[in-house]
Image 1 (cartoon, helix red, strand yellow):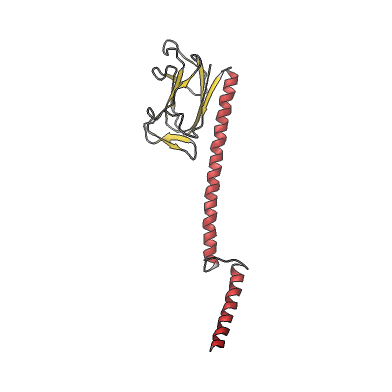
Image 2: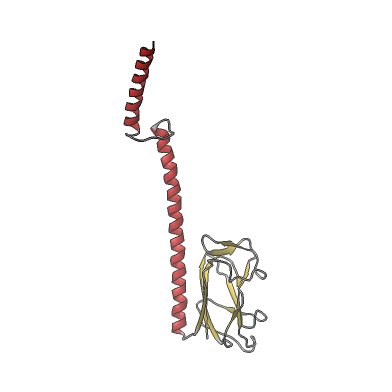
Length: 200
């Protein structure tokens, strides 16, 4: 009786080994009952890898746009002989005045801010300059179909003037008292990837 059981067990083992080597390949082990389960699991893993790859492509695209915006700001600084520049690409929210800003969502993984509803205002922290600026250029990188509106102050937010991105802006001394504390206020309508400001 023991000999018969051993013989049956030996045959079953040989058959299992042949099937395993034929369907999964020699040396392949795992908790899957058959190759179909293994393929489904591999497809799930590949799908996850594809999602990560797509995320990396999206991150790279955003980084390229931010690099372009930074170069654009530097080019404007040189073109108009400006002496100073700030640039914020939202790696963090240190440039946002959180007490005066509302209605926005910040993405730390993608480095952008966008409106959370219909009413969104972003106000930057104060940038103290050596002298009172007379002219500035604002560059922005936005993603969306609706253009946001921008205001600038050189007296720490007491007086605001409207400013258009990529246009040379001169402060009006009759409107804005001279000061050396620059702030920007944004009525945000689209996703903001970065902004730069250059002045003299």
